[in-house]
Every structure is written in C-alpha cells, then in structure tokens.
Length: 176
Image 1 (cartoon, rainbow, N blue to C red):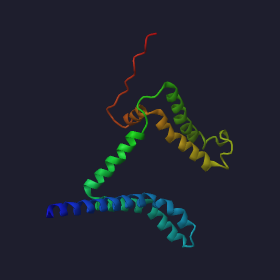
Image 2: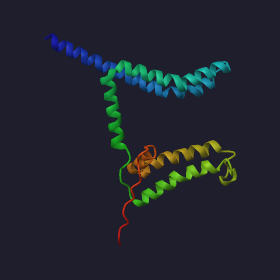
Image 3: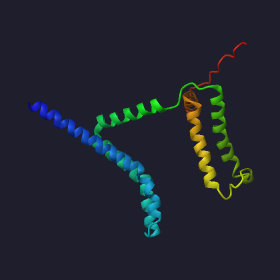
Image 4: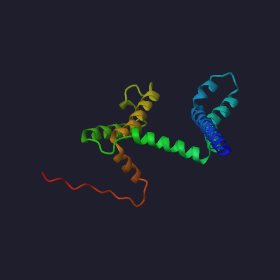
C-alpha cells in the first residue's frame, strides 16, 4: 500500500518538475524578445545596455541550466528525445529530386553571393542603401530555407566540411 503511494507521489513530483523545467526553458529562450521593450523604456542608457545584454546572453543560458537542474537527467533526456523525434518527423527528406536540388542550390548560393558582393558593389541590389536590413533578412531566410529544400543528404555534405578525414565520393556516370 505504501509503495503505491510513494510511486504515485514520485510520479506527480516528476511531472511537476518536468513541467516547471520546460516552462523555464521556454521563458529563457524567449527572453531576448524583451529587448525592444527595454530599449523603449525610460531607463538610463547604461541600464538599458546591461539589461539587454543579460536578456540576450546571460538569462537564456542561466534558465537552461536551472531548468535542467530542476528536471533532472531523466526529464532532460525525455525532452531531448521528444525534440529530436519532432525534428526527425518534420525534418528534410534525405533524397530529393534533381529539380528541387537545383532550386535549393540557387537559394543557397544567391544570398552568399549577394552578401559577399553587396559591400563592394551596393548598386547591384536596387534600394539596398535604403532597405538594407530587409534585404539581409530576406537573404538569411532564403539561405536557411535552402537547407530544408536541399534535403538531408546536403546536411551530410555540409557536415563533412567540418570532419577532417572525410572525402568526397562521386557517383559513377550512368551510361545511356
């Protein structure tokens, strides 16, 4: 009888700790969204700088450590397993069609090319001097979305750039 009560109490405590840890994770990672509110406030400039820096750099990391400490290793492993299962289910396909691959390559190369050329020749992008931030956000979005369009095999190619012993293996040309 007491073993069942103890197990039920531990289960409730584990659920409570898991939920609190998850809330702290989310709050910590969303804390940089408060920076515009801080900069718009009437606080002195030095205080705004310190608080904004803490919201961007210190608080997300601190909340992550506290959340992991509250959840414990089993809770953290549970959250991590669910997160990676979600990514695997909704992530990019491994193999994509040649057309999709070519479109993804264009989306991958254009932002890099424009980002490299824009400081030298700002006139190649019409309105860049007036709307530079918007153009850069569009380029970053295009670059990030190209990874999902290019598929999982492209992720492996990018990963191999950072592995010292990796080599390229080209497919044999098909005889027609």
